[in-house]
Length: 122
Image (cartoon, rainbow, N blue to C red; front, side, top):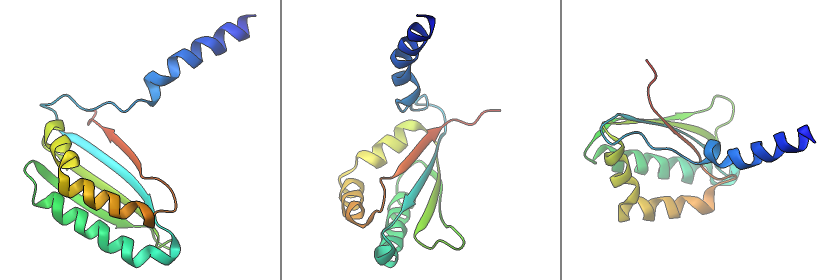
């Protein structure tokens, strides 16, 4: 009985842990994203990530955008991105150009984007 209540309470609490939470609008927004391309689409995927980085670098509020290829696994990438504010990040993600580019990346993926927004803890 106690175990059943515990499991029920954890089930109810899970959405709070899995829902993405944005930084407050005046805080820097840190994003780490993991990207895995289909092996046959790696070169095309790398080019699309470079385009995404270029688009971000032309956007207001970007501090840095780094595209990192995993050693020994050329179809695995991590993106480490810092925005001056969550509002700048949202504006970038919601722009028509970004949405079109992200849509063109989708068919090249082995797995969905694994995006992890966060705040700096000092």
